[in-house]
Length: 243
Image (cartoon, rainbow, N blue to C red; front, top):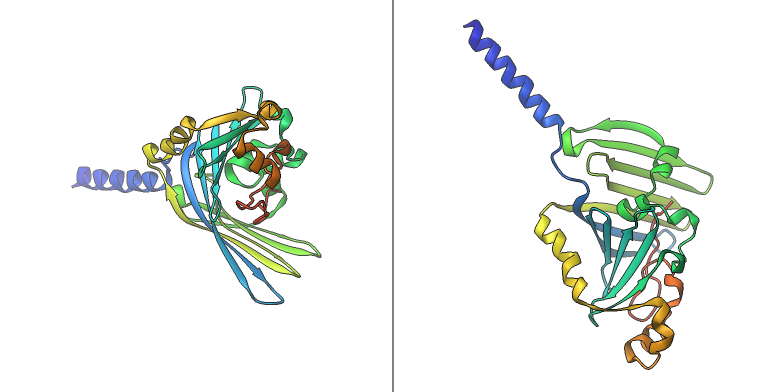
C-alpha cells in the first residue's frame, strides 16, 4: 500500500514537472499575428496579418496585402543583413549590413526575431505571471503622458501574445492567433525563396535596364533598404512596435 502511494506521488510530481516545461524549440518556430489599427476619432479599423518565421539565424517577416517577404540573417559578428524577396516576381535584392538604413535602435537581432526589443521589455513594469510550460505568460504595462502600452509575453516561446499601444489618435493591437512548430513548413519558407533570382544592392547600377529593378527603384524599394513594410505601389502600410 505504501509502495503504491509512493508511486502515485511520484507520478503526480512527474506530471506537474512535465506541465511546467516547454519542449518547443523557440529558435525554429512560426507565428501568425492579427494587427488591428483603430482610429480613435473616426472609430475606423484597419486589419492586417503578419507572419513571423524563425529558423535559427534566419528570420522571415511577411505582411498581408503585400507580395514581399523580408528575410533577415545574423552574421557571425552579430550584424544584420537583409534579403528582400518580391514573391510575385520570384526576385530578390540582397543588402549587406552597411547598406541597411534601419537606425541604431532597430539593429538589434531581438527586434527582428521577436518584433520587440529585450531592453524595451525590461523597461516596462511587470504586473503578473500566469500559465505553465509553453503558455507561461508575463504581463507588462508602460504608461507615459502620451501613450499607454500593454504587453503579454510568452517567455518560453519568446513571442508576443498580445500587444496594445494607445495614443490620443489611435490604438494598435497585436494578437497571436497561431503558433507553427512544423519544421518542414518553417524550413520551406526559406528554401523556396533560395531559388529566386537575386541581385546585390551594390550591383543595381550595372543592371539599370532590368525592368524589374527599374520598377522597384521607381517605387522606392531599393535605396539603402529602408526598414518597414510597403505595398506593391510603394505606400507604407503600418509601423512595427520595434522599440
